[in-house]
Length: 598
Ligand code: ADP
Ligand code: MG
Image (tube, rainbow, N blue to C red; front, top):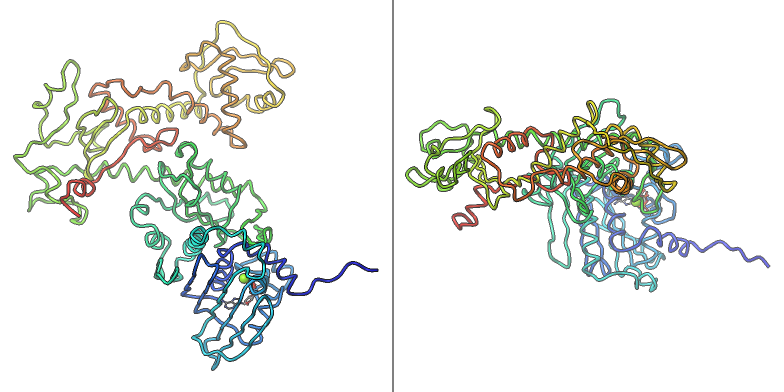
């Protein structure tokens, strides 16, 4: 007796639904993608009870004629690809022709659709995959899909759903992805009869992100710099400047050809690009868009189309790393400009005085001390002076030029022997002197390593040691880099090494123990990253010890030099471990805190 049998259509759809429709957010994803593919300018998403009781997506896209509408509910029916060649270069979000029949097979489903110039539209009602009604429907041009009682006929799947709140949040995240990917489309999201958000069509990504996340985040984002011309892809978008990070990956968004995706290749590239600009265990904030030839990416990897495969992952990775790096370094210019703007002195804020600062940005007169009020200026002790002596001797209201004439700001003092307080045009700047010193040392050593190698000092006695085979293999691969970093290491027989010198800036009593630690640390930190990064890791791990400790009191001139040097760095605003070196507290923030402004 034969035992193999073809599955009935509905059952086959339910099997497919298992992959495509994991939860209400997947329904939202598929329906919104369809609306985008249909050329919608406005998409409205309405959900009830976490999308379990209702998901409705309404668009003003191209709509469907009756035959197409019926066909769209068949499995493997799509208008988006026709041939295998199309599959190799997909330019739409959908292509599998599975979403609508899958969703319709596990819910109570209603589709109404109308082409813009058609006299009448079509309404189709389906329950658990069985078409129950087909009739004329008179809705507005576009398409509306209503999905009720998701998984009502699949109790096993329904049990796996999380709380309504969690499902709602998943949906909201999904909509954020789509809205970020398509700023030109207006979105509205209504949750349990309340408007959760309403996004007008935006002129560009920046505007969309401002509408979604507010100005505060936008001010800390940098426009992404393009990779070098040789890279066969465009990279654009906005990413958080150094020091901006999150505890989860929720704001680490990456789009490949307009599709939000998750990709280990890109995640690793982002990490490497941020490198010392990211605190351990933190995630960057990115709204990154990669546009490449559709034939260079395979999107047909995952049923929910969440993942892609790159034809040349190495090239993609390199370009992303380069872009991120360039972008973060470009952020330095912003900082420097902030410091270059002259400090608003009381005299300069008097009415009638020439001022180059647009009124909107100029601090309110109440924010700066009025003439006659005491002005606390630089009160750091100079050689042989105590803080008290200085308080009266510093000329009031005069900006101090640190490191030449280029950076104008006033050093006010040092708090708790750790934080340098400064005033610039925007308000108060706090600098962590320890973190600042780390950054300066780090960049100096890196420069030396890149240029001529770190100077090293011979050990009194060369030492030999053995390593586990895998560690030995790692060292052998990286010998050249280690040597550039000032570590005189060479192979000395099977899995054994000889070490005869160490960088001069290190003070190590147990070279072998030190080497084992370095290898452990670097191996895990630098999995697969470039040799240069390896050197950076090593430096970052060692400079910390040398940097000014938190409580070292600094003389005024030392502080001045420290700040000057910091501003010359490539990435002045964070230490090599990604912690911030400076914090700006604006006049506005101060005014709010003092209740001068609401
Ligand atoms: P796919 O998107 O992979 O083609 P779907 O099952 O999601 O498969 O949709 C099937 C077809 O139905 C699409 O190819 C498209 O032609 C049509 N369609 C679906 N949703 C819409 C919509 N909102 N507006 C216009 N046409 C749509
Ligand atoms: Mg689709």
